[in-house]
Image 1 (cartoon, rainbow, N blue to C red):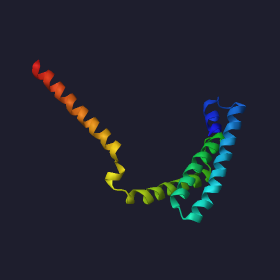
Image 2 (cartoon, helix red, strand yellow; image 1 turned 90 degrees about the vertical axis):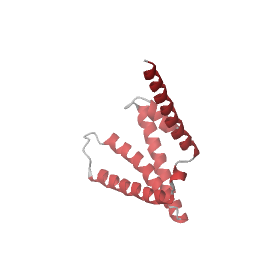
Image 3 (cartoon, one colour; image 1 turned 90 degrees about the horizontal axis):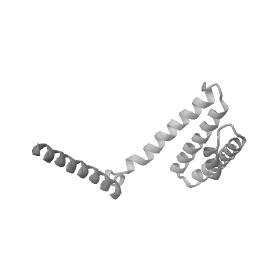
Image 4 (cartoon, rainbow, N blue to C red; image 1 turned 180 degrees about the horizontal axis):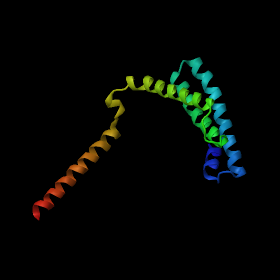
Length: 133
């Protein structure tokens, strides 16, 4: 995590940025290579999909840094399609098991009610002002 912060806040192209970015990418590869067997051994498909998603972000960043032409190559397209399938897999795994209430837990409802109540009061204040004119 420290290498990610150093890479993020250092000037691009400087040795500290390049070294921190390489360390971050190496760490993400290590996490990916350990998460995949763990997910397969435990049957945790969500861990597998999250590992794919996280690695894709690091891989894409590395590819963009190395590919100065900006033209996507075959490996980039393969990675993006794998990410698409991973995203669809996460959606299929998560969404059907959720009810609307569990998706909008108590703090979500509090936020929704606060927004609507605030707009209702504001409309009433505007109406009162307009009636007084």
